[in-house]
Image: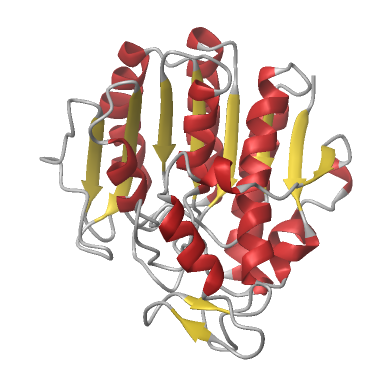
Length: 308
């Protein structure tokens, strides 16, 4: 089986403004990197639109309606200083969520070994009733919920290696022991959450890393802390929040990772998934704001997915 790639042109129409770091150019950089010959074997699929019932697995319906109603017919509308909507934002976020839901279904059906969702806006900062941090709806959390509620799985894990803590994903799952959320992230840094003391009901594992930590600290966090805990949890499905803004070239953080670190962590997560959940993995794009580093890091991640 091959790796599935979900994306949609509508994800390019979410445009928070010319000076906003979460620009359409991010997705163009990822897609350009994945357009090379070595990625020709990807099974490329169009992301469908999620429906409200999908999104409501992680967000109350009044909040969903409020966000979609805030999408402007022209110009921009700000939810907060960081989170800005444009006329294309509504369809973009529905396609982003729809991609993860469709990927979960396809991997469960055996149509692909694993999947990568090249979509935007990102989602891991979106709390159940709050859009923030460039994020509107939490696609990773919604996909994890779908894996359990639609496909009857008992345990689902979400691993997040974005440089920012996924406060939204943690908020969705911190009281539900059927889900496990693990995150490495720079601290101190936005959004200010993700202390190691934040453990939910024993199902949240945060490993904050100081600025300039680099590869060794990152790999140690996984090999000694996150991977053993994930193995103990024994998920039936693994969702990855794949942010590439811990790269040394990224302008928004200083964790100093390299492309090789994304190859390594992806390979290690895939090895574990093979042991505990038949290799069932869906990954979705989160952050990454240096275009060259984002493209090369996403390519390293997908290359490892394809080699599984």
